[in-house]
Image (tube, rainbow, N blue to C red):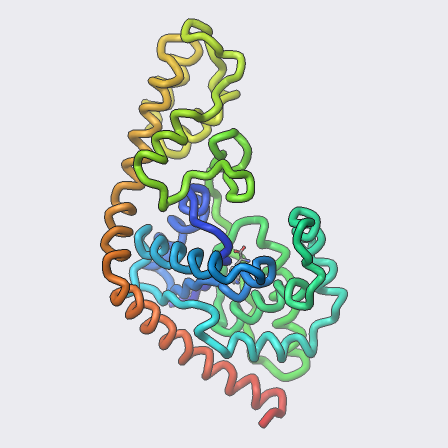
Length: 326
Ligand code: TRP
């Protein structure tokens, strides 16, 4: 089986956008590929280096949600980046051959610095973000990396660095390819893209009450003020979420009801709440089970780390030899 690798940076809680955009796709790949899924906690340090408590909470949230959403430790390898020290070694060695200009011209570098202008991101580690990501990927000689379009520049530089390494030291690394998935856009409760930084996200760790409350207070077509006003579903983020979570019949019903004022916004939201609950209920149940049994979680990580470490150790033996190291 071809190998697939992907990860998420642990800098916040997982939300519905992450679930639909990434995690559900990862779950589907388990049957067809030898999948390695990890938590990039060192990457979280590149921007969140001054908040260890938040980092720890986020690692736990990701781990529990990975499994609760359907990553099966018997079918894939789940591990934590900082548990595999070989990633740091490979990152160091790759830093020797990577021209600064390659890192400086990755578009996310300047974009993220601007976006997070309140933090000091003029650090060595932050510039090296895509290099650490390259180490994560090529360590496992992954053929495919399922990611969103935002990560394409990172995959591009990963391929360039793998190529440069092979030119200097012989054929060690295959060039990884992005596995882009079409997924529906998931708006947040205010209509903008769902994102933890906008404060508009529905989290997998939210209680049923919180989820219901967030959806009930969502913005809709701003022109539909009174129950008797007709509305335009295309102007309502609630309808965008229906497109992700509701059946085609339900979608047709709410469109018709909105355009004719046949239903009110609360009626429309009730259907959405029901359908979001349908997706979240099994996740909530599994989360509860996992949170009640920290030893089981621990064992899953230990097993995954051990398996990942074996692969990483083997790769590093080749790398050291190829580079003429001790
Ligand atoms: N940059 C990814 C993110 O946005 C996280 C990540 C780190 C990653 N290393 C990776 C993704 C390797 C895929 C492969 O969260």
